[in-house]
Length: 383
Image (tube, rainbow, N blue to C red; front, side, top):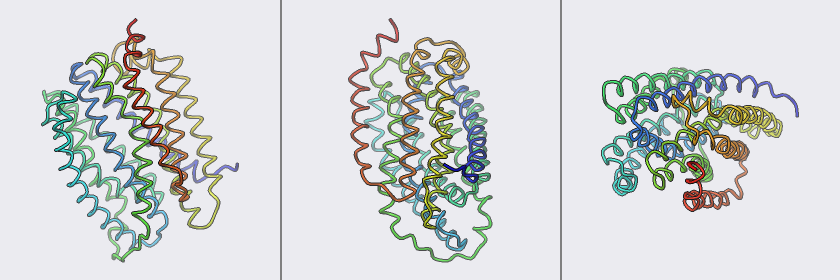
């Protein structure tokens, strides 16, 4: 393996940006955990888990746009890709929102959450499905600095507005409202790094095979996102309010591993895709990415193993022994998901997607075990 300078330099930029982005997201979750009541935070965590599942469309769109923009060097054609993608994303958002409103009727009864709150949460669909279009082009053209600044802007705006809204008494509505406005304003700000593309005269671009490529991308992204978010929703169904909140705290903290290592795959993807376009080998890019990923995973798990109570205390404001006792094990699970995510994105970047439907088997096993073993995990936590 040779050191890939582009990967390491781009990775450093995005890791720093993601670090700041995730820090503000951590403060966001921390603030909501302390400002909301126990029952309200349980509802808030469940709503965000639903948003994470909806993020499958976000990641799919951004991955596909990244793939095709990384292979296109003509700014005029890039503008065409941008315009058509935004138009289609908005139309899809409208369809999904209408479907979400219908599904929220039985979902609200199952989760014991007010329907209007669920419907309000669904507004995130509009802001979320258009933002990955502009970010995908930034990522594809390796404009990592602009991408990082945009993500940081989103997290800062979301945090500031959510604290303000909750402070004045809006409770869960305020927390969700801050997130919606944060992504909405970030979308408008995302056009700034793309102004050179927007100013050019548009030229029709050929995106041959984009829908056939989107199919495996969607399914792979769906499985990965459901893998790391479905546990909180199931916990809300099978556990008491207090136990569900306790589990949600540990689970959200463990997901910091996935979010913190995501920049590695985001930098690797356009570099590997570009190599395929230019008939170069991409193995070296992948090996570099794998080394950086393992460094991050080992460091995170070490902290989770030796300092679980300290981490829980920082997040929740007090030591919760039950959450601390499972933090390391949840971290191991999240680490495996992070490795899987890197491997699958690499496969997508080099157009090798055979066998991906088998991942559904492991997802079904996870859901089955979460339901079947819920009583088993209940008693060790409180014995």
